[in-house]
Image (cartoon, rainbow, N blue to C red; front, side, top):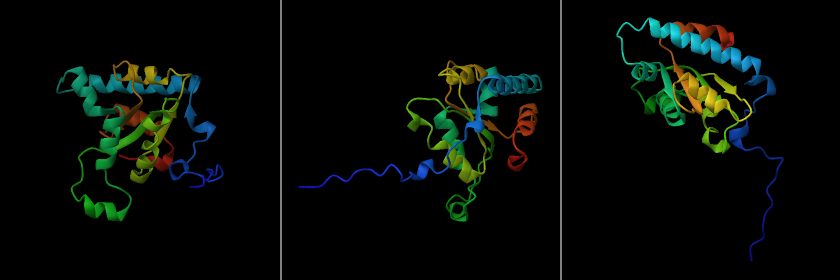
Length: 174
């Protein structure tokens, strides 16, 4: 008969090696301010939409919406690791400036891979939480009911300039 080996709770799982500090979350007034700035950036960038694309198409060109699309764009981005550069020599035309992830989603496994993937690509991650309403508030930004993750594409527009002021100086990309 096999013996059951207990799980060692002191041993950290590799995916949890980058724990998020309490001060890294955007919630309350800080979250309201962040979402207001992003909304303002979207509105001012929309005004400079010279191609006059429909709103949904324009928004998809500016923002990667949803876990799958954010993951897809991050995977196609150039890695900081040199071995990955040889495997994917063709560089994507899209770079993400920042990824915004809902921290209080259930199950947590849905978004657990995004911080490590973003860190390997040099993309900062902003975590938001709002008493189980963060996905609703993030969805409002992109004209959907809910969104668990969005990635702002680096396009050099007003939205990118506003986010550049919010991000710490060691994460500036453009």
